[in-house]
Image (cartoon, rainbow, N blue to C red; front, side, top):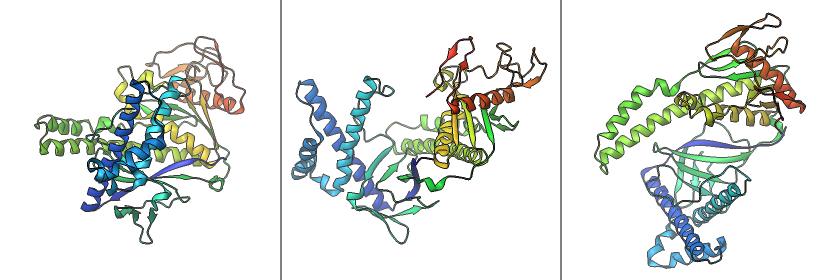
Length: 392
């Protein structure tokens, strides 16, 4: 087992004065970020050297506080402003790494707007933030903020990020390092999982988990709130209230889906020593007529949870190549019986005569192939008969 970094988020309940202080911190961090981005874009257009972070910190923070136009930067913690510059460095580094092929491509850094629905600031250890004996979060120049603690942190975090989401809720986000002492006792079970839409997950042991369809069930309410928003005059206070209602309705859907993913993934990790899933092409499926149902299922988030929980608790996790013909192979004899339309839910193997449930058979094949991938000796054959190299 290896140590992994985990993010813990807890709901904050700031007072009216603390909300004003947080809004001031969000605004100052945004202004410094935009000023630094403007300075670097100006230097690029004029052919000048790329301004370094240290020079930007001196010019845009230290010296700017002494000017009438930016004197209000002194009203917030200087650590928040320094972290804003580091965020810009990260955005540029990710952009250039994408151009070099080191990571998926992403757009160039853009200017932040005060109308962005999600805002955040980060406090490091230099800011001397702390958790009080009474369980409150003490932040510099903001005060002691009430926190709803749902669990204990596994280790002491060095930074805390305060986030205001689109629904107007405040969260404290901690990144902590887990240790090897959290490994679970070894289990004998191995399971393969076939993800779908009618059934969210079909297990190789025959269990079928129905798809909750959180978005589909909430569509009527979402439609009413969106219609109410569209009828409000732009720029009015009533439109801002209606927008908040829409955001809260979507947040409830996202929270319910996330809770479902957490409960199911934790159950599977506790019950099995090895878990195998298929590496689905979600982006491709999201371009079909099933796009809303695909996004509603949230396969990628679920698989990510399985992956990091397996690393945390000492389990074996394997992804089977997306071109592996799991629905075409007989799990009993290994005979490849050819392509089958989605309408075919049961079929009989032409070689050994075994009657298969399409999804359970696929899950069994995924479990077998996942065992080979974990052992590093998989030699996958795709649907067209060609060899596919195993994932690293």
